[in-house]
Amino acid sequence: MDDVVEFELARGAKPLHAAIAEHLAGLITSGSLAPGTRLPPERQLATTLGVSRMTVRQALGELERGGLVRRVVGRAGGTFVSETPGGETASGAGGISAALRRAAGASHAELVSAEIEPTGKRTAAALGLGRNERVVVIARLRLAGGKPLAVERTSLPSRLFPDIEDMDLAGSLYDLMDTGFGLRPVRATERLTVAEARPSDARTIGAKRGTSVLLVERVGYAADGTRVEFSRDRFRADRAWLVTESTRLTD
Image 1: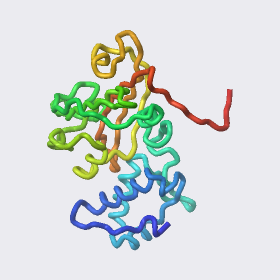
Image 2 (image 1 turned 135 degrees about the horizontal axis):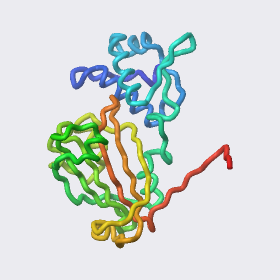
Image 3 (image 1 turned 120 degrees about the horizontal axis):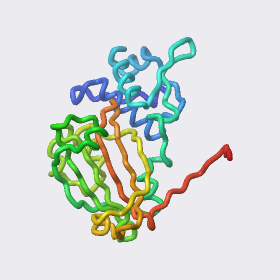
């Protein structure tokens, strides 16, 4: 365990507690720290990393607010990796949208647009933003076998991601959010519903009006619990499907 949590702490680039929280969040989301794992005590972590216990406590507090760990008091207590980070689990690694893309064999995404827009009521509520705040709205077309599979519309708080709309958005958006701003989503809550195709869906993914699309709404959280992403992904229902495996079945 000690060799897992021990790492070279870069000092000066960002607050120490934020750097520790980011590192531990990465270990949790990658599976290096499995659900239910008990982390070393605060004093031991502080000694291992060469920081104060207060710094470690701040880092663990951020992870707890983000739903990645839970802290239990008492003799058998401690800090444990959450069994289901964030309180919900989707269909495997990456969540529902990622599972739909994998099942359909989706490849790359093509940028459609990237604009700064006023925050609508739904987006403001999802991201916890005020009425006068603005968001960067990034629309991308996801392809599978060279054919349109989904249109992904992602809203990011513009104050957290200044000028991201002018950056290269052809690759991984999460990687760019991480390397450029240190705000990679480490957990998300998602909701899958069936919606009626709109005229815009006919133009983007070829779904005729009156047919159905699969709508995935996602709120992404950074390691400190900040809501950094609200996405609405619309998949062609005739080209996307979800497969799950279950145990301990009940009727």
